[in-house]
Each structure stands twice: as C-alpha cells, then as structure tokens.
Image (cartoon, rainbow, N blue to C red; front, side):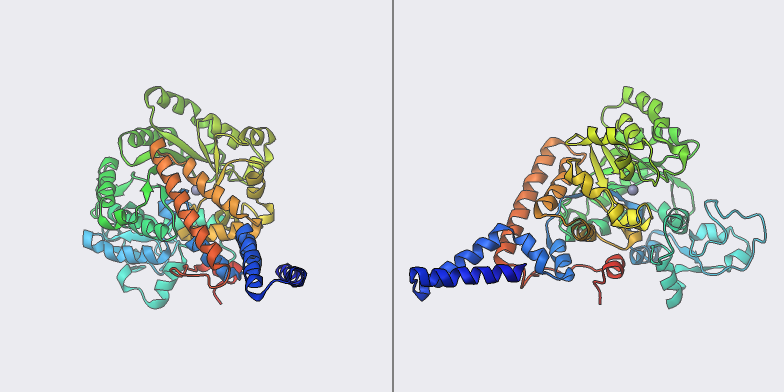
Length: 490
Ligand SMILES: [Zn+2]
C-alpha cells in the first residue's frame, strides 16, 4: 500500500514538474509539502502498516495513557517483586518460609480444596505459623532466603500463568493459596502499592484505582490488625516521596468475595470501612461467577439497606465474566454499579446491550485476563470490538497483570493487533478511563486536560519523526505474555 502511494506521488510529481516547468527548488518544496500532508493525514495508520511489532509495542509504551480502573493489587505483583518483598519483610519482623517438598506428613484427611491444601507446593507462611507445624511438616518448608536457584525459579513460576496448561483453576485455586501469609502483611502490601505506582507511571498512566483489601492482616506474631489500622499504614506509605513523585492521582476500591456464606455481612463491614477511610471510594465484588452462590441479586437487599444510610460509596462490580449466557450484567446495574468488570457475556443479552449504548455505564475490558483464564479461546470470540464500535463505553485495564506477566502497554498492543484500533479509538479508551473514574468532577476535568496536553504533544512528536527513528524514551519492558504470544523477545 505504502509502495503504491509513493509510486503514485512520484508519477504526479514528475508530471507536475514537466507540466508547470517548476525549477528544482520549487519542485523540492512541492515534494516536501506532499510528504508532510500525507504524514499529517493519518500518521498512525502509516505507522501500523510499516512498523515492526517491536516498534508498535515501544510506541504504545511511550504513549501517554489515562487510568487503570480495574486492577487487583494482590494480583498485580510480578513474581520477582513478591520474592524481593518477602525477603525485605524481615525488617518489619516478618520471616517467611515456603514449601519446597512433601514428606507425606499428613497421610490422610487433608482437603485439596481448603484454604491451605497440604499438597500445594510454594505456599508461603510466616515464622509464627511454621513453628506451630509438626516436626515432619516443618522440614517441608525452607526459609525464603535459603532457596536454591532452581527453587527460586519454581517459586517465581508458581505464581504466574506461564504454562499452556495453566488457566482458570490454577489461578483461582493455587496462586492466592500460595501467596498465603504474604497477603496478610500490610507493610509488604504497602511496598507493592509503591512498586505498582512506579511501574504504571513509567507506562504513562496518570490515574490508578486499585482494589486494595484492608481486612485479614496480622502482625508477625499473628495477632490481627484492624482494617482501620491497615488503612492508616497505607495512607502513611502514600505520603512518601517516591509515590508522590509519580504524580499519579489515585483512589482505592475494596472488594468482597461474593460466593462466601457470610458475604452480606462482609459487604456491610466493607461498605462502612470504605465510607470512613480515604483514599477508599468504592466497593467491588469478585470471585468466580460460575459459582452460582454469588449471583448479583443476592446483594440487592443489603445494598438497599446500606444506601439508606450512606451516600458516598461507589460500586464497580465484576459481572459477565463467564462462559455461559445469563443476566448478570443487567442485574448488576440494578445493584447500583456504575461500572461493570469484564462484561464478556453482555453480548448475549441484547436488551441490556441496547441500554448501555452511549450510556452512563462503562465496561472495564481485560483482554489478556480473559484469554489466559479461558473465557475466550481466541480474540475472534471477544466482544470488545463490538462494544467499542457500537458506542458502549469501554476502557482497557490489567486485572491481575502480575500473574499474566504483562503490562498496560501489552493490553493496548493486543487491542491494536487483534482489533485494528485507530488512533481516535486509542484516545477514546484513555479518555473513558478518566471520565468514568470515581473522582470528583474537578479532579476529573484536571486529569482530562492533562491527558489532552500530553497526548497532543506526543502526536506532534510522532508526526514530525514519522515511523522511522522512533524511540526516544526508555525501552518498554517485554514480559513473558507478550514474548510468548507475539514473539517480541527474540
Ligand atoms: Zn478483576
């Protein structure tokens, strides 16, 4: 296509040159004018048709972005971060042990589906808990600082979906159970917040709305820490220079596990907690939707009760993250949600789809998550393009990118490659991620204005420099997902 265009331009120019008898100087000027007109008309389409995948990925990394509205903090730690933070935790008195072998200490009566399945390797527990084990079981665990190189690698691989046969069951049934006590240390989680802020700022985001839980934390001796104390620890960390220097605007959500028998009680506690603790602004509901016990309308009476008393808690709720058709998205909107997480099976509910066109609700799209957790077999079966192009507000987000070993840049890369996004659509996705943020109107307007300034200057630079001679900034991290699926790392 590009070649044809050049050829046509040359023919026109030669004709023009002879027709008007232009001198060489004016001819050069004419040529420059034509070339720059073509570059200004749609530089991104030209770029897509000529750039390598590597250059496209680098461009999308350097591109200013809006926000990430759907990410679970505990799923957003890369394996090497967990390892590093587990080692550092001894400064606050937390010493960790991880399970590296099985001695068949528990011959019978153990449950593979419980919270701490005996046979699950690389479960990481704190010293106080390790001391309570039998002598036989203690020998199955090594201090995390004493792992051999191969044990270290196995630890890292145990909390990311790195094998083709690993999917939804591994993710829901093993990753979180392995992280175990690491998830109960508020200082470690504070450092994880800091690492995420820094990585997302490097990718050019200006807003984050992570789901950061504050319930179930413990001191090194295993005595509980109250959620309000945990929130205080987080707030204290958020005032530190490294986080402030990222310039990110942030708000937190708190999630609840929807299918547990006492989920209504937890919802009430979490709702109250969010209402009284900055920077929390919203509640989410998570957990496998194919477990029917957590169906959306179960929570309608509880939420109506809570709404009688509280005015300041926003709802973004996972819905439609399932293989089969149902009305979970419709029912979740009835719960009062302003945003829907995933919304994959919305495509099977035409009435609700019609309602959502150009509407006040946004669907948070998680392309990599949906593929790796096997909700779609390939992107041909993903409704993202359909939603985007019939006017349902959508934004890209990362969900649990630590466990996919991917980045926000990768989400944009997948969207461009698989759905042939135009530059206009890319900008719309970023704007949506700010328009639908749970912030006050003034903050929203400020973020949108900042995004427009940043993206205009980025466009201008790219129009001038064209598709060649691309990168001027830091090299984009190329993590396992993008390397394996798109061969970007050879
Ligand atoms: Zn999610």
